[in-house]
Amino acid sequence: MTHVPPHTDHPGHPHHHPGHDHGGHQDHHHHADQDPQDQDQVEILDLDAEVLAEHIADITEWLPLAAPPRRVVDLGCGTGTGTFALLARYPEAHVTAVDSSPVHLRRLRERADAQGLGERVRTVEADLDAATWPDLGAPDLVWASASMHHMADPPRALRAVRELLAPGGLFAVVELDGFPRFLPADAPADRPGLEERLHEVSDRLHAEHLSHRGADWGPLLTAAGFDVEGSRTVRVDIDGSGNEVIVRYALSGLRRLRAGVADALPAEDLAALDRLLDTDSPYGLLRRDDLTVRTERAVWAARRP
Image (tube, rainbow, N blue to C red; front, side, top):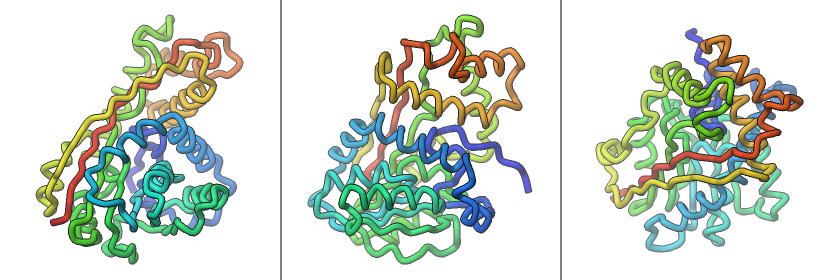
């Protein structure tokens, strides 16, 4: 089997298909508690939700819904960034959260119970690349954030969503413009432009496996039988100076990026990256006061006729 480097296009999905387990489901399930990679991923998904909460709330508010949805499905839910934003926006809604990772779903369930939302959340472990999907009801709204481009056959997945939705139901596709940027363009001083070079290597490594990353989903949605009712781009530019959460987010995110590109980096770039990631180094991220979070999210709202 061809080795696929860890996905680094999004800090929350570095090595998992949201709907596909790469054939390792049984071993992953039984040893999830001992896998530090899974725990690292849970941490970065939680940080992603905290840092970008305002932007996710803005997207949920924008959705062209005629009435508040009562039944929602979150495809590739991770640890629940979208799930909890939707529960907050629509107090009468019940959400079915779907992911291939039992670790993510367990974390989501813990959060739901802790917030008193357990009765409004159903978790479903599923491989969305499988020929048939589990029974997910007939939702009024399907939400898929940073998950559709991971599907092995996105057009087939889009058709499956169309069949899943109640007539007149809405499908919200949220995709992001690659991995967030954190450093100034001229950083670090000894290897200026390092972060952009990391992204260039990552994009090259993943072009074959993530061919729909950065796609215009409008025509694909139309081809699958949806009426596209709107699209927009949400720009994220958050000043991280003095913000401990953003420092942790940058540290975790760049560690995940390193895992995917280390073998393809020049030695000088790898050494510079490791200095940034060294929590004891005077040149490390923990000592910088110029971090930001810069990314874009593209959103499409499509209705089943």
